[in-house]
Length: 219
Image (cartoon, rainbow, N blue to C red; front, side):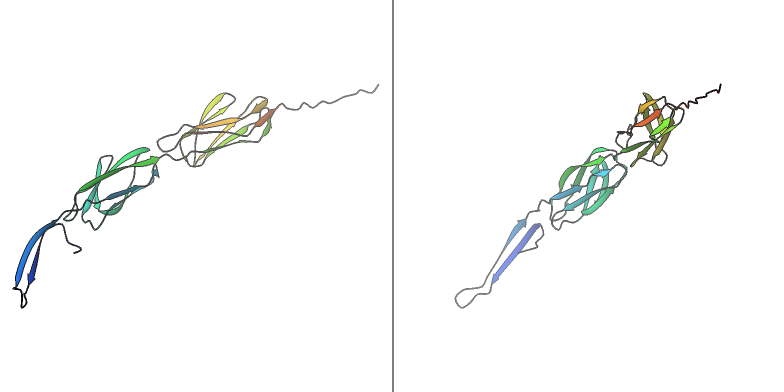
């Protein structure tokens, strides 16, 4: 017998008899126990600010709802579902799924961890022009791959300058004595992006060329 629900069932048998045997009937009862369902949780890692998807499946033909707790916050959903979770901070978050059961399946619980990670903040640092004379500006341009606002620190010749990112770009003009230099940029990180650092190309500041004029007086 297939597709019997859990619970008490009665079976009846009847033999109508023949020329040698009388008729006979009999009955009995049996119990089909509830099955224990398997709860499958697939929590896909996501970046801070993005939707994190939690896929849940309760095995078999289980019916009803499941209750999902993400860091203790409760959501009730259908037993086969994709749940999008937003506004989670970076780190590992506890996901607990509880199925209360139905006529054929017992209650069950399962848990997993959902990882939310910070995005990269890679920096590109360019000094331009690569060669200037003393008294002229060199422009240090810092471009972030992902970060559009906030501050970067630009270190030039032992001095730190805090410069704001505008649409992912920060610019600093410096006037330096003669010498060879590099600029180093730092993003210190925040709740959404990792810290990063990078160094510019070498640039040069040279002394002004002195023009000599040789004057000879006729005798």
